[in-house]
Length: 91
Image (cartoon, rainbow, N blue to C red; front, side, top):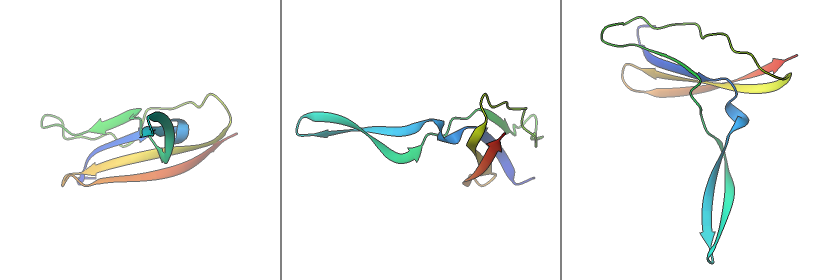
């Protein structure tokens, strides 16, 4: 864990689509890129004064049963950003 500088979680990663605007022939249309926007819901990071990083998130409650995807982002001490998507099913 000494290599991790920062990590964060978006508990419902696929709830916000990345939409861009495209202008063709004077008309503007909105198009989904196929990607989603990461919304940092929870995070923990090191500071110079506090080198301790939390290893467990605060509890999260889903309002409805169903399938969700959570994304975890980790940044190491070298500045390398890594993301991983985890599938969750709430019954």
